Length: 116
Image (cartoon, rainbow, N blue to C red; front, side, top):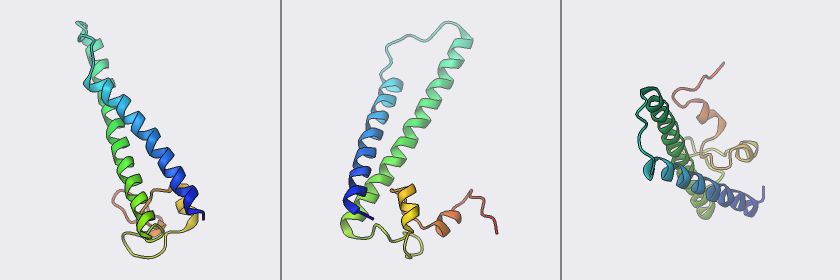
């Protein structure tokens, strides 16, 4: 696995997400339009705002994971699972380059549906 390519991919993804988070933040926090007098339209606006805020939060979480992955690249622990300490498989890192857990530990996270 070429770590320079991984770093480049992570930096590109980071820039893309930062731009998306900025757009969603601007949309929810710097609105210029007045609230609609129509109650059903207000409900739609509120639902849209909730969705956009969820997307912003998701983007912030992904940015944190990417920053963490870039740090792990710098300190030489990129391939090391943060939970068990074993190696994270190359295929998993190719699929999710900012993951910090091996597939076994990721399966053990709360809410996962592990099948035996």
